[in-house]
Image (cartoon, rainbow, N blue to C red):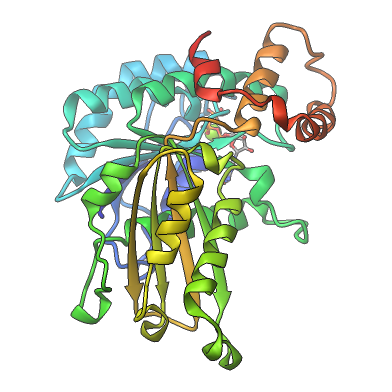
Amino acid sequence: MKPLIIGIGGAGCRIASLFFRKGVSKVDYVGILLDTDRAHLEYHEHKHRLVIGESIVDGNGTGKNLELGRKIMADEAIRIIEHIDLVRDNIDCLLVISSLGGGTGGAVDVLIHEMKKNYMEPVYYVGILPGGDDISRTFVNFSKSFKPIVAESDAVIPVDNDTLRDSMKLRGQFNYINGTVFWYLNNIFEVGEYRAPEELGSNVLTASDIINTFKGISTIGIGKRKIDIEDENLDKPEMVVSLTEKSVKNTLTPVDFRSSNSALVVVSGPKRYLDFLGSIPSRLWVEKNIAGVEVRGGDLPGNKDSLEVTVLLSGIRKSEKLKYLYKLGESIESGKLDASGKVYEKMKVLLAKIDELKTISSDIVEDIGSR
Ligand SMILES: Nc1nc2c(ncn2[C@@H]2O[C@H](COP(=O)(O)OP(=O)(O)OP(=O)(O)O)[C@@H](O)[C@H]2O)c(=O)[nH]1
Ligand SMILES: [Mg+2]
């Protein structure tokens, strides 16, 4: 499946750039990078770059000012669409990547609205959630940007930096997280991009399987296991099921995977591991464990020394983390929470409480939607 990737703002451009590297994927990714910050944009080598809002912020970024970002996005939407048209070639979808807490990145609903008017292909969105290291302004921006972006996009994948962070690392967290985001998304986009008959499993997925699955709030999970010689005698379908269970707990943002409406599983690994039942055990397990009944599955023989189960979960109705961040942003904005205080400390305490109170979790989409 070939997306046209649009990286916006600091975080969005850094993640999008990973897709434009040569030889990292079966997919021939195309796209553009946009930022209000000239210096940040010039750092990237990609050919198709566009500084936006120069007449307003003179290439200096918005400084987390969402109102400014919105004004710029509205002024520049048509010019951006013209640039998208320059790289648009045989694509299956458009994918916008940005941070939900940035002044530039949080303003993309305006652009996505314009894109939906111009293109037949679905428009997906990947958004970085604010987290532990961020200033309170980013939480406020998130609570203002999330709902309009969900409303404009065909599907949204939130990315939780706090979950994906490597606790062993002191530096380079963003690089590490961005690499993970690339890996997870690329596993899904490689579906349908077959180069040789040997790559075709017994159940073959195509781009339309993804399009039919991918709707509303979504996430991707991966369960992976290196294969040892001793593994050859183990029960392979059982191994696939256990990696599936791992994958739904190992997603880009913590969600209640059981509340998903649709899902797609891709099982990849050495052919001999897929010959018997392939992705079927994984698909059946997901079917049994999510609310919806729409589950698609396929296998990708080929690669490597490991068995990998990638799950795309869509139409998610519950995520305590999203709900919590949304409320946190609102509380700071309304002055209920002291914005100068250490947001993260409070967040940790509250998250612990939420963990205890999981039973009173309610529907995030309806909850946010009813405001
Ligand atoms: N995963 C990830 N998160 C990032 C990265 N850079 C910044 N962030 C997060 O993104 C948010 C800040 O957004 P930026 O992308 O820097 O903001 P922007 O879209 O450039 O908007 P401005 O306010 O105009 O600079 C914060 O929540 C950061 O923690 C990155 O490279 N990777
Ligand atoms: Mg910036």
